[in-house]
Image (cartoon, rainbow, N blue to C red; front, side, top):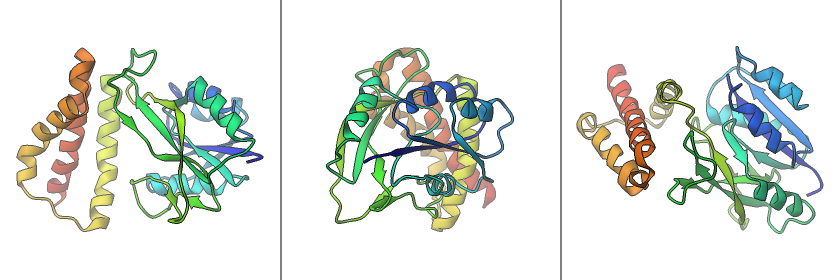
Length: 249
């Protein structure tokens, strides 16, 4: 890996983008930011970090990220969301890896952060998707709507990075409610494309089931008051997806 492009899609992210880009520029040889009509200072922040900024009308998460990927100059790319910050350890790990990668795709651990967190809690919810990859062997598909996951050729082995990305999904309750309202609208497109029909029983069980899932199974019970609040918000988001489907049908 001689050069690395880092790409992001953004919309009205002035409160979080600077922290994301200030870490990303420490590994990026090229920074690609695709905006979908921000009305705040998002674009100005991106340009301050010497990013190549493109405007593209929103269609879906996958379509937008695929568009951004195609704007990258280099084969090796790193996908970040605007609310994700690379840890110092991950920055060091990727810079060392740039000299001689052993795989053509790598998974990166992503840890959820609550607003007051300085470091990830041992009970933080974690994901482990492919985020660093060579575009000759993997790609972001444009047609999977909001299931934004990189696809890797079947014969390719996938490496694992040890350091983390910090995921600052929550800024406040108001921000989370606004985000989940918009995202539940987006998920209606995915449901329509799948042709899936929902049982009316989901209206009664979705919220309590999802709350128990996040609060107990995902360990939010160990996160104090924040865990209670955000497990409730996530359950509400899942309920909204179901309720809006029945409203439309």
